[in-house]
Length: 300
Image (cartoon, rainbow, N blue to C red; front, side):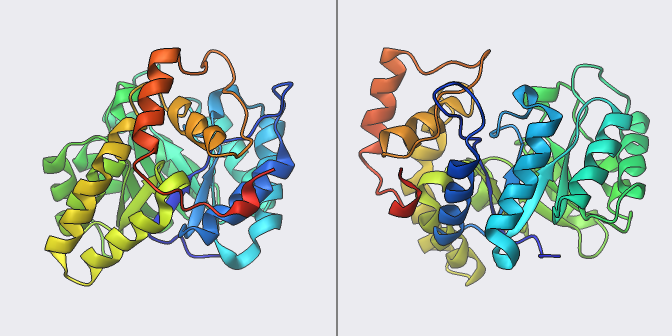
């Protein structure tokens, strides 16, 4: 089983012209992302449009991507949803397909209590041998996983960390300072990576790394080397693309960026749509400022 590293790309799911999953492009994109600095990939996460993927599509993606990258990077399977039983079932099946870890989002829509969240994540973790990463993203789930609950869960043996996308630096500081030894914090927002890593966080689950992965990796390496001023300069240089890829709902902008750069990842599935003309113009202007790190091999 491959260790989950510092720079993880939340990979888009490529679709063909008929809106079906393009597994050939998915495999090609996965390899190219590793070449462009990623240590691993989240498959069927928010950026991968997990709500519009069938269970069968998710499992085949886990299998195909793992077959493609082997031990070259970690496959982190997005297996959490608002049903504990369904999350357990998908996590177990992802493990059979060769996933290296599971990403478990806070249950959305049904708004559990903190005790409900604790019991939900504990039940999933106890059902699998996979390392599990919690995912706190209250902008999408409404309910936030509190720092107190996160600290409780940090003592579960195979819950290895949290993807923190709350943007709440007080919460993140409490987790970093109080979690069980070895528990890791990945930034869930590209724009927060510098701040979280300088506080002692481990890495990032990134969207922008589809396009500027080597540049993000360079910024992270500067932080790890203690070259904070230089890292800050890189962070500020990259901030416009970090922000720009969220001017409308993710993954609309990053899919547009990849397609504009010559890659074939297709349109988002409904209810997501392609950007309107004004948004497309904004994205084009922004993208001209950054060299794309992704290898030519991912182009069709």
